[in-house]
Image (cartoon, rainbow, N blue to C red; front, side, top):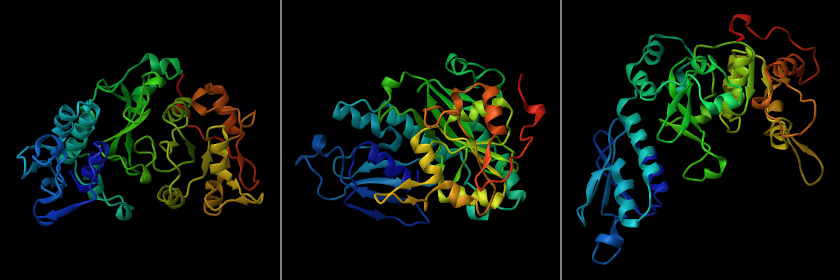
Length: 360
């Protein structure tokens, strides 16, 4: 695992790394040395004032740990279970996360550098068709239909169109995410359990295989140009695709980061914002009022984009009623997108949909 993944794992296990050191070299295996987390249970003094617990930093493979004081050692992905046994805590979900991160480090090729991937060359083709990425996708079974999806009017063959998979261990629907060239970048997983079970250990949405949301939209693979209909959530994205709009994008539940804005500007296609009909969604588009009653638009998405590309806003019949696109029927979605208004007042566009992709 790389250092960022190792630190993420230590953070989840509540292992402080304030005092640490490095050994080894970048050309060979490096070690992150910290105080031993087993010290309260295995060290004679009950503490480890010197960083005697070493973790290998291995960007292209598995990481291991070893304490030179107490002698405990093993694979880093197994550390949650072992430490949980001493602490009498259930770290099974953290172990699963660590195993997935270990799998990603073992089987995945490096992602093409985002700053240099503007050309469609042989390296991009090789990355798109890479067998390791295919193996990561095949690890989870395909979804044909689920009661969770049917209850939200996501019907067959939309799950096949989206390439949805299922993680039975965590009861999550997995949406595969692709970069702008169609290369697989990881999964984002939506829990189908009851909302009362959500917690920090079991969030509603969890990412797999080191998914970098800052630079990625949720989109269909191979779709490079066309009016982009941008929504927030996974079910919103699925419903818009099912309605017949192949250029649907979702921001993966995060803010529209500067990296994503740069992508939209570079691709130069019209942007249709179909956000949730709540205060947060509209403030993100148009800005917020400060204490003096002045509208602050520095970070507002519509203001940051409209000078570079046409920006369209999909309106709702009733303002701020909490509606999201995923809860609407397909006829309403078509009507709302057809009635979208250009941010700076020009007449609307027509014929965004591709008829051969519209589902019955």
